[in-house]
Image (cartoon, rainbow, N blue to C red; front, side):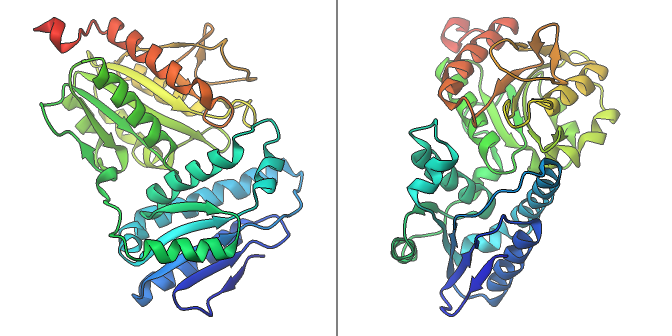
Length: 343
């Protein structure tokens, strides 16, 4: 059970304890954190990750993960903007040895954990994130953040500045990973001089009819838990049944974990592709499946996946190369030339 220390009014200090965390622990974090926001006084959050035993009940673990994901999503939607104004930052205290113990084959595990925490804190909590090895480092870092302005929160909106966009790039993201990949795709797309792209978080779209404003769409979706849709997509998924995508060219990309979820790798990608196909969309960007190791996927058809498959857990070193190849492939299939060539 998590232990909470709030003796310092400037700090929400959380110790994870020596037992495996349950969803109830994260629900308690959300309650304590929300109460601090409601109090209206500036504060910082420190999560001290302590060594613990791991249970081997896989079904129970995945059930808990699903509930924890829902807690994170609710906080992101309901508290992120207010938290952005009051919270100095989120910092995880964890020993480098503990990180490496859980990723023995990854010499860069500590640095990857730090980068992931920074991305997650910015996306889910609207604050700067960090990883350090001691509580003293954590409090010193939070003191430094107190003098900085809040992070800008326009990252959940649309990025359509400049020339009118001809391609809509919509994505759903829970922890910020899919957002990060969408941004990489947009950068690669723009670097190639292709027609302007609008980058939009699906959480800001009230109705998916907005997608029909574009003749070309790039849609991104991660697979969560046991082959589930990302929740911002899931709440809108039924809207697809009301829409006619005939003539709309669509390329898809998905985020998944081929090792820990080998039986459900990129299932959400497959579900989105199937539904869009039923609604008349012209799908492009199918990607070779033999570059991955998984047992089953709803996205797989005749040896090819329904779109670009990214695995930031097990193959992050391949992400940039895959994105570059896929962007070139989609542009060729859509017969889109760089602006200089079109001119």
